[in-house]
Image (cartoon, rainbow, N blue to C red; front, side):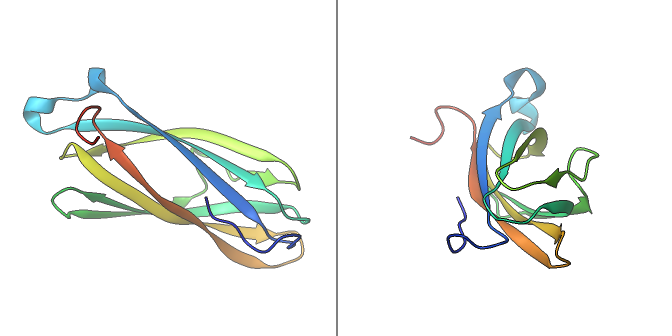
Length: 130
């Protein structure tokens, strides 16, 4: 979870949950499908809109995919102070284990533009990592 100074006008926390989707995966074909749920919470004192995302997805063979796009799941949510936004999306790896990290570009109501770091999290087929 990323944190900024307490009582800052722009202070967001990111929480992640990952699920492996065996019914959509083809392990023999090296296709491993994961869903991830992200919760973004505005702990600051000023509303801000999530305008774009940047993901860095790395598999166990060190192949890196960079994904950039507008908003998340077709939305550009405006998060008021103490408000959260949760969404679920997915990714496909060619290995059983990988990582994701990135950032969200935010535009605050006070005119500030800033990035909120998405801390690295692990994508792993169950029973592969202990």
